Length: 420
Image 1 (cartoon, rainbow, N blue to C red):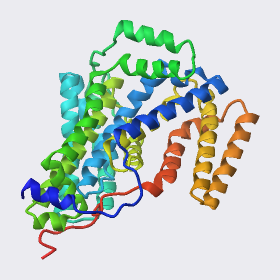
Image 2 (image 1 turned 30 degrees about the vertical axis):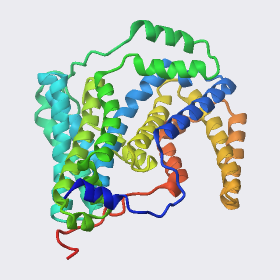
Image 3 (image 1 turned 90 degrees about the vertical axis):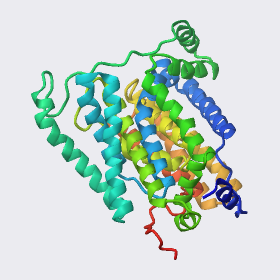
Image 4 (image 1 turned 90 degrees about the horizontal axis):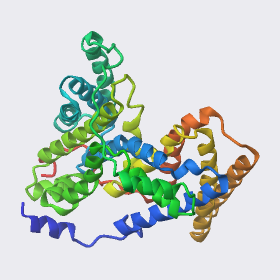
């Protein structure tokens, strides 16, 4: 199939749904607006740790495995395969990354972890693409299989190793981290002045350049890399055509099975990289280490409207919320009540503008309740702190549901030649 033929087909007139694409300028505008709002909340609540260098650095580390799982889901679903098995592929990445990492070093652990996740992706591709099994059933089966398989392997590998047990690996050597000495110190000092927006921006930049793992840098580069491959190459155009209309793609000469296989294997490899990142950066594998990050990564991908930039935004949001309970705990989450209340006021104004009065009323009621909760308390229960990342996941998906547009053939069964 010629690239010009596919390009012409993709350039055919389409009905506009009135939604604006999440382009880079819009992403930067959203980030700047969000940072200004967080800065305002920090000044009102006095929770100065919200945008500290340590907070942002921790949030980035927590966001990376979520973002890699989300990118993995994006690759698979852009080719028309729903990948609920991301959690299982993360688990495979953590186990294989730790197993190879403590024996042959962290970089070998990363490569083997990617391979472990890719094997999970290959299994998912065989089940869904070749045998046409329901994608959700296959993904759930892989999650269960990966958990049981790694528990079984741990019994005669880690349990027999010095310093290991059936539930955790021996210690793994860490990869040396990057710290831009003078710049990190200057940004930390500027953040400590607690100025509006400027100090918060310094905290965000300082968190990115302080104690930075090379694995984090690679993960960040995968975001524009994914965008370039899928949206600026002939390969990516063919792959995305399989997720939009595989019958039409086949009629133009695309080997749909091949592209679906490639996409799902890459999906598993990215999730495996996220799992290996968890094991290597924490220095150990532990049973249950992924903690549902594969599912949250899937939520980040949906929030990002199946786009790399939006997926990264979603992963950053979930990583930030997850890091709140590690630094300042109840105080930081209490400040977030104020932030959510202000956001709901903005939602209320937007719904009024759109003349959706029922939704506006619900948003206003929730905003008032949160303002009252914030005003009458000094902290929140520890159980709410632990549940904050998952509550945020549900809220984000609920609020963003109306603007989502998944690939048209996502999850739909396909057989070669079915359009003839």
